[in-house]
Amino acid sequence: MYQAQPSTKSEQVPPLAGFTVGVTAARRADELAALLERRGAIVQRAPALRIVPLPDDAELLAATKQLIDQGPDIAVATTAIGFRGWIEAAEGWGLGSGLLERLDAAELLARGPKVRGAIRAAGLKEAWSPASESLAEVLDRLLEQGVSGTRIAVQLHGEPLPGFIEALREAGAEVVSIPVYRWMEPEDITPLDRLLDATVARGLDALTFTSAPAAVSLLDRAERRGLLDPFLEALQRNVLVACVGPVTAMPLEACEVPTVQPERFRLGPLVQLLTVELPLRARVLPVAGHRMEIRGHAVLVDGELRCVPPAGMALLRALARRPGWVVPRADLLRSLPGTGCDEHAVETAMTRLRGALGAPKIVQTVVKRGYRLALDTGAEGKYATPSAP
Image 1 (cartoon, rainbow, N blue to C red):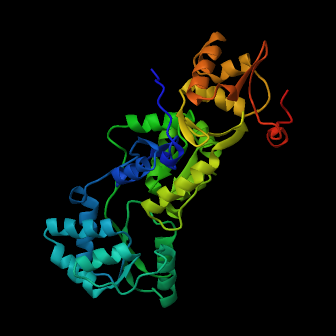
Image 2 (image 1 turned 90 degrees about the vertical axis):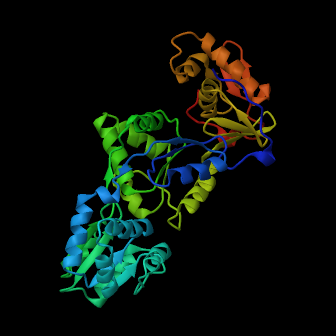
Image 3 (image 1 turned 180 degrees about the horizontal axis):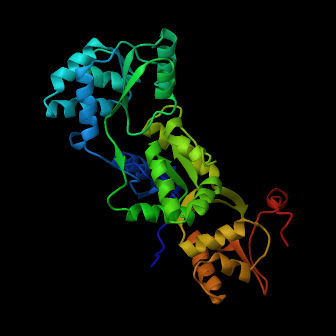
C-alpha cells in the first residue's frame, strides 16, 4: 500500500527526482543505474541481451586462427573492451603471441582514445585514430587511401556495422570480420517483459539504450508478444528514448521513434542529457498561488518534491490536460485503472492527492460537476483548451 512520504526541500531535489528511467544495458548496467539513481531517478533494469563469454565463442576462435594463418594488411579496432577481450581470449587458446605478431605487422587503426589505450596496453602501437571517435571518419580515410586488393580485419562490437564492411568490399578489399563477443536473448526474459509492459502503460518517463542489439531485442520481444504497435506508440508520443550514439539509435529511428543522443558517446554524457531533457518535459502550471511541476511519479510544489500515489497522479494528469476547466467525475473515474463504476473511488483518490500535494486549494471541488485545477488569474489564456467544454 502507498504511504505518504515527507516532502523534499528544493535545495535537496536532484534533477531526476520524480522520474522513472528504464535501463536495457547488459554491460555496465550497474554503472549506468548508479549514475541515474545518484541524480534521483527510479531505475527499472531489464537487460535486453546477454553477452556470450569470449573463450566459449567458437566463431571468434575460428576467425582468430584464420587471421593468424593469413595476416591482414590493415586492422580496425572499434572498442576497448572488445579488443582487450580478443587478446585475452587468444592468450587463453594459446594463440596470443601469433595474433599480436600479425597485428603488429598490420596498419592498426583505433576508433578512439579508449581503444588506443587498449592497443598500447597490449604492447602495440596504432597507426592512426580519428579525433571524432567516428567509424565514418575511419571509413573515409580508408577509402581515400585506397583499399583495393588489401586484406582488412575489422573487430566488430556485438553488432553489425551498417555500410562499413560493405563499402570496403565494394572498394575492392577483402574484409575479415572479427566477432569479439556476441549478443543473445537473456536467460530470464521476465524483467524484459516487465519493462515492456511498463513502457506500454506509460510507467516510464525515459528508456535508455547503449547498443543497437538491445534495441532490436526489445522490438523483437514486443512483436512476439503482439505489443509492437502500442510499444512504438508509447516511444513516439510519451516516453523519452535516449541512445548513447547514432548507431545504437538506428533500429529505433527505422521505426520512426524519435531519439536523443549526447554529443559524446559515453554513459556520463548520456545521463547528463537526461538530466536536461526530462525536466523540460515536465508540465509546469501556476495554480492557487503555487508553482506546480508534474513529473512522472511525483510533483514539485514550489520546489518541494511531493510523492503522490499512482491514483492521485492519474487524476492530476487528467486535470492538467484541461487546467482551469471542470473535469466531470465520470471522466476522472475513467483515468483510474481498475476502479470499476464507483465514483467514490474518485473522491478517495482526490483526498489522498490533496494530502500528498500539501496544498489542498490546488484542486477545487465544483459541486455536482467535478473538479478543476485552480489555475491562477491571468494564466487562463495561456493554458486554456479551446475544445474543452
